[in-house]
Length: 222
Image (tube, rainbow, N blue to C red; front, top):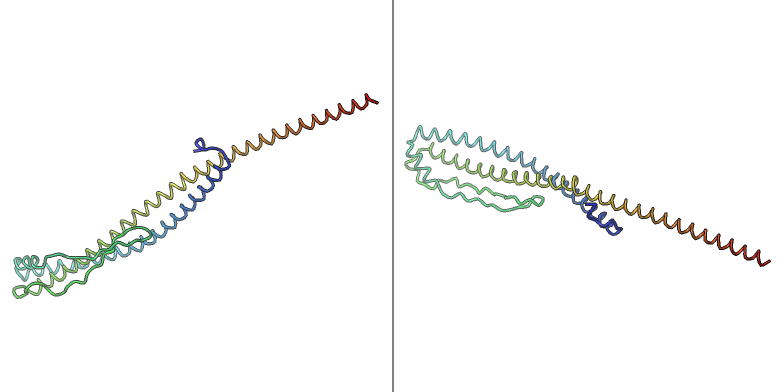
């Protein structure tokens, strides 16, 4: 960049301003990255907890399912799954975490009452249906936490790349420009100082010669 800039004092001031802006930007991005890292590790705990909960309720639900198939007919279990199927609505909103847009999913309260007639269905089949409703809730919680985790992780990588670009490319480039401009200006000042010294010395010599000539004319007149 040094070869593309004009080595003037105005360019030096502009480069200093750019350096200050880039340094401030890097500091802000590092603070954002640190905050996101803290949020990331907090979400890791939530994600692990949600995964653990999903594993627990899934294990219980499949145990109930195997028991239902053993005590009730498979046809009854399948008919119950069809009767209990339907839309599972969730409330999803978008929230901002340090500028990162992430989904916030609210798990609705599950209706504990079955929406079918349990006359021809055994208690174990009904329990299996209830347990798999818990599995659905656990899946939604896992999806919500892991989606946040992925978004924040991507933003951490993006922010880190920006910090590295500023600290390793932009800021060193501006500092190089400043060194180049200062070097040229210092060289110009030295050359100007040397030129002024030569002019001053020449003026002093001319003055001495004029004084000497004036003294000679005065002696000749006497």
